[in-house]
Each structure stands twice: as structure tokens, then as C-alpha cells.
Amino acid sequence: MSFLWTSEEMVAAMGGRPIGTLPEGITGISIDSRTIGDGEAFFAIKGDRVDGHDFASMAVANGAPLIVVSEAKLPALGKLIVPMIIVDDVLAAMGRLALASRDRSRARIVAVTGSVGKTTTKEMLRQVLAPSGKVHAAVASFNNHWGVPLTLARMPADADFGVFEIGMNHPGEIRPLVKMVRPHVAIITTIAAAHLGHFKSLEEIAAAKAEIFEGLEPGGSAILNRDNKQFDFLEKQAQESGVSHVYTFGQHAKADFRLADFEGNAEGSTVWAVLNGETSEIHIGAAGRHIAENAMAALGACFLMGADMPKAMEALTALRAVKGRGERHLLGIGEGHLTLIDESYNANPASMRAAIALLASATPELAGRRIAVLGDMLEMGEFSAKVHEDLAGPLLAAGVEHVWLAGPEMAALRDALPESVHVEYREKTADLADFVVRAVMPGDVVMVKSSLGLGFGRIVAALLDNYPAFPDTERHS
Image 1 (spheres, rainbow, N blue to C red):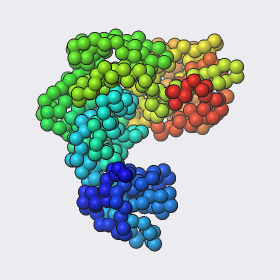
Image 2: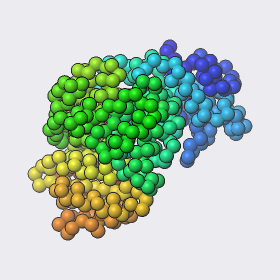
Image 3: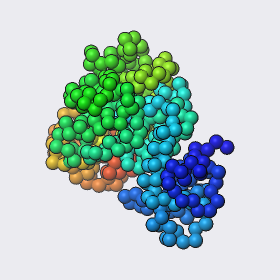
Image 4: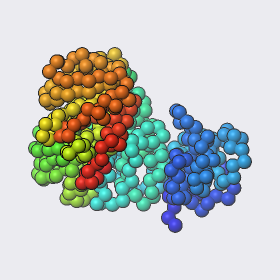
């Protein structure tokens, strides 16, 4: 059997104390007692809401052959009989295991941050690097103080490429994580008005994102968005951090990885990309200009890490939007169908505009309507009312005549829209979900987007529960 870690390696790396007869090794690491896989160790991490130690017995019942627990919690585990590694603090111990993983790895590592597009770009990198070797990448959006070390600790010793997403909503959060990951290539997708409640300006956001440069391996490369207004600032930050190679992507004439032309439709796009001085026609299977722009960064990383470029470009044909980030569903309703665009995972002013542009590119059928179902953008602080009412302009420019809203902050957009727009407003997500399910019609294109805290995934789920997905749209799921 091939082990991710032997028990001996784990004990040594984490500075742990073994209890019982440990298995020879483990096949994986889990922090969710409900979904323990065969041969996976359970790490009882104490999170913001729950403490993994409370679920240790469930993990054992579900087949965990080994659990990692803290010394202080050992008395509370009672008579639980299972091999254990006892540590001072489980999250800190996992961090030490992550460092050991990075030390043993020969993989080429890329790390991605940015205000918008991190997860989509991470998934893109997973896809375009796959033809060139074994790729290890984070699941979901594991980009925080526990997600990054977990992803790194899970990286197989024989991985050829590692892809990491690093997020933040306060200064100082990226620095320790990127120093753990030590990437060869660092990508900043863009700087936009996200988490404005925690920052005074876009430049402060840019400075926090620029922490990613501090963990680059010697001789490593940064890839920056040449079209972003914070480019000059970020380039200077990179240089001051000792980054020896700064590359750029975007539509700018001077971009190293340039989007020269773009033709998009509801299903995807055809782009003409100038990479290393050569122009290539590339087909991308996910819709949106913002997807195409970030594809230039992903291809740039492929080039810098020595991947097979023709195969990387070909792989973009099979790219699909990520759940909650542009995933499309064709749903049966009455004698026809409607198109659901699921953008429910998160939202800020920049990603809202991108999603509205995506809705504009979709063509309703018959008498169908373009419908924007929008919820609050959180963490906007004192700027909240302004950034919400400012969405009126993009909606009108996109020709969206039906706007259905929920959340206290969206009242500002409701009041900013003219009478020519059919507006429905509910304070609570659940009330809007009930309305949406009743009000959609054949031919409609419905785009659902909000910050995660609004729970707009429930609106998507309600539509999927009430209207069957067409079999030929399974490729989008």
C-alpha cells in the first residue's frame, strides 16, 4: 500500500507522543469525522465554531485508524480505544507536518491570491498542469489558516506540481501561509474592493496581497495583472521583497501573457493569446471575459514551471465553471427550460460586475427574461450603501430588467433602480427563495449571486429541487 505518511514520519514531524499500536501509515488526512476515507487519520482541530475533539468518537466509528489529539483534551476522550498521536496543539502540529511535506517535496509550486478569481484560477491551474504531471491542489476554497496547512500536509511526496490558494480579510494573514508554502510562482489575480470594512483603501488591500511575495522561493516569479490600477504599486512591492522575475498578464499591450482578442458566448469563449511572443487560438469551456483573463495567468504559470504548453492550452477546452462560481444548469420547467447561473459562493463589487456581464452574455429563449437574483456584499463597512447602489449602472447597461433582491444592504440598490426595472425585494433569503421558485418561467436566464453569509446557495438548491436538470447539462455539474 502507498502511504501519504508513515506513522513514524508523522510522530517525528509533529513532535507527537504515540499511544497504542499505530498503523504502519495513513493514506490521507481528514478533519471531518463524517467523511473519513479508508486509511485516513483524523486531526481533531479546534475551529471557530466546533472542536474536532467532540467528534473523535464519530471519526473512530467511521473507520479512522489513527487520531491526532491535543494533550489537554485527552482526559475528555474517556475510554476511547484507538491509536493516537498526542500533540500540544492539533492545528500547530498539522502546520509542522505541512512544513515537513514542503521540505520533502520536489514539486513545482504555484500560489494564487487576489480579490476575485482565486478559486477559479486554482481550478484552472489544476486542469492545465494535469497533462504535464501529477498535480496536487486544494479542494474547495481551503485558503485560510487551517486550509493551507491541511492542503500542504496532504500533498503526496511524488507530486510534480502543487497549486495553493491563499486568502485573507485582514493584514498579516497571507505572510505566514505563503512562508509555509514557499511557491516558485505567485499569482495575484486582481485587486478590488473586497473586505473594505477591514481596510481604508485599495492600496491597503494591495499591500496585504503583496505579502505573497515574501514567501517566494529564491529566483521565483510573480505574475501580476497588468490591467489593474494597483499594478505599479504591486510591481514595486515585489521588487522591494526581492522578487527577481516579475511577469504580467492581461489585455495591456505590454503584458507578457496577453489576451489579444476575445469572443465569448454563454457556453465558453475563443481567445487569441500571445504567450512568449507566439499567438495561439484557444477555446475555453467556461464563459466570461474574466475567466479568459485569468486563463492568461494560469498559462503564464505553466510556461514558467516548464509544463507542456500545447497540452495546457488544449486542456482549457474542458474547463468548467466551479460550483457557486458561474456553474450553469439547464432546468426543465413546464414545456421548456430555464438557465441557472450559480454565482452564489461569494460577492464583492468586482465579482458582481463580472457576474452581471456573464448574465448579459446569455440569451433568454422565447419570452424569457434576464433575471439577477442578488444578495448583500458583506464586509464593505462604511462603503456598503455606495457599493450596493452603484450596481444599478452595470445592471442597466447589461439590459437586465428583472432584479430580485434580499438582505438589508440590498435595500440601497432597490432604491437606486429606476421604475423601468422590475424589482422584487425581500429582507430574508428564505422569503426570496420561495418567491424565485414560484416566479421563474420557461426561457428565463437566472443568475444568483451574494456573499456566502447570505446563504443564497439555498436559492440555487430550491431551484434544483423543484426543476429537473436536463441530462445534457451534467457536464456543468
